[in-house]
Structures are given as C-alpha cells and as structure tokens.
Length: 136
Ligand code: SF4
Image (tube, rainbow, N blue to C red; front, side, top):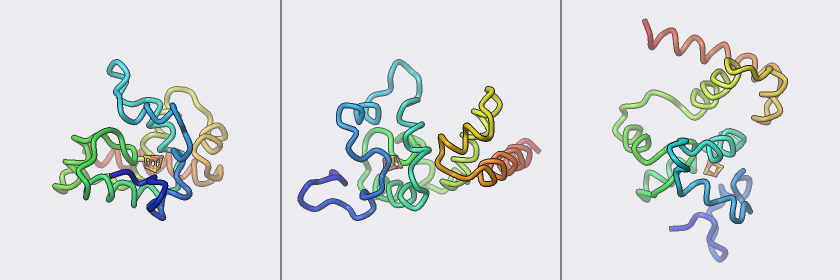
C-alpha cells in the first residue's frame, strides 16, 4: 500500500517531510552500505511528530518494508511487540543528543529538526535523562 497514492492519499501525508522527494525517496528503501538509512533518518527527524506517529502506525499495520517514521522493519517489529519504550519524541531527542555530541550546536539542531531553540535544548536534556535511566 502506498500512503502517497495519487487517488486516495492518506490524510497524514499532507505535511510529511518525505512528500515530493522524487528519486530522493530511494533513501527509504535501500540501506546504503550499512549506513542504517542515514539520509532517511535525517528526513524523518524533520517530520512533524503527529505525522511520524501516524506514519509509524501505518507501517506497522501494513507490515511495510523499508524505513518509516525513523524506524527499520526490525525496529518496528520490536515496537509492535512492546519491546521498545521509545516514543517518536524520545527518538527525536535521542537523535538530537547524538548529533549534539558529534559537535552540532543547539541552534543548528533547532533548524535541522524544525523546532525552537528551547525545544532542542530540552530535548537534549531529556535524552540524557533517558540514557542515564537505561544505563542505571
Ligand atoms: S516519518 Fe519519515 S517516512 Fe514517515 S512521513 Fe515523515 S518523513 Fe516520511
């Protein structure tokens, strides 16, 4: 099933960050030499959280292949079984923390993820808390 179907598109695709990607959409269906869908991850991270949630549910409900809502198929299988505690917001925060630790500034992350400086800053702090809780 194609959520972007020209005749009956899913309503949630209207604001999707991956809409109208053209050939760039290939990033969602091929794992480029083990880079774990790096390009697709960046695009999903900019997608509105409300869209990510519906995208994720759609992919799980339809047993979709490829990369959807920031997840690989095995990751979605784990989510569907309740084995992953991360919500889309927590996943976004974890991605921001990862990039922050690689040298990105909060201002750069705010632009990249389409959020305010305060949201980016809070997200990084919360991701640290989640990581500490998991490690404890
Ligand atoms: S979460 Fe990712 S795959 Fe889903 S609609 Fe948004 S950009 Fe596309």
